[in-house]
Length: 471
Image (cartoon, rainbow, N blue to C red; front, side, top):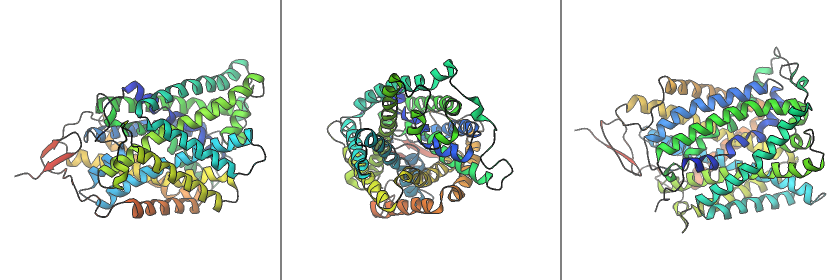
């Protein structure tokens, strides 16, 4: 049983609308490391995300009918060379996104705890976070269309309120562009720590700015298949370039860098007008709406990645079942239980609970960067080894080669991430990734339906690409 195509590309944009919102999660840590130059860094990161979207669009077109996004199609391309890499690329991708559920839910939980239950234990934030995750499961259990319409409503509310809070101060003159000067990192341009800080900031920014590719995770559910998937991907990537170029400038003009570094709650509560009667009502709407919007985008994509992995024999078979609404219900529940457990363990091992979100983000990004690096290499391999295959979308000349250079660039960022974010967090990300591979991958994964992309006789079906030996 496979999900029925029922999503237009317009609803696909709504489903992916949490990607531009993700900037709120990492705006603070990036500003803390890079200072005012972070506004340029964010724009560059979003442009790189758009550049990577082009080869990803080509790769997904080679394997139509596959949900799960770039990880699943990259696994098909890598499997003839290495079954191990085919498994790693998929679990890396899932880990990179699913921990976003823990991050958004605990930010929402802690904010609601402080407003509704001041003075209560930090474990109350955990309980609220699990409740937020459960609410997402209930909504998405009904199928992709109810989730898409909820995303549309959340996007409308969050966008209107956020624009009001960020743009109105600009129109009324309640901004300080002096916050952007001196235009240099906290340690200055000549400090030996500056390169490490900028690389670490770029590493964290990439988790948000590269995220448009999540639109491909439900590519099997678009009405016009790959065509709608590619259209949605490129539209979301272009929107992200605009948002990631403007929001950091507006935020830094309205609020001091030190306040932004404290996180999204401190940012919104410090905006000019946030203390007025209207602002005090709008700030909670913007924050809770933004957290749930981003969380729901991730939940929809992550569950479909798990579902496709299970159907391809590379995750527990029970995760490959659809409920009567055509939704991957078991995968949604698995994401809920996994992230609730991750948050509980994080609370137990971290004395400072405020550090939990950034520690999880750094750990998640290990998997996310590993997946994108492998996917860019896989796209280049497919262009070289199988140029004869029909491509519903062919990336412009030079885009695949540029993708290979970006894979090298991201590899450098990944290799040095521990210097900025702590080797403990990076090691934790690697350990959790390998534990997932060991615990949740069936024995013999990747041995069935192996694809040989080097043959000149290729046929594609709705679920797999079968290339036989040339005779």
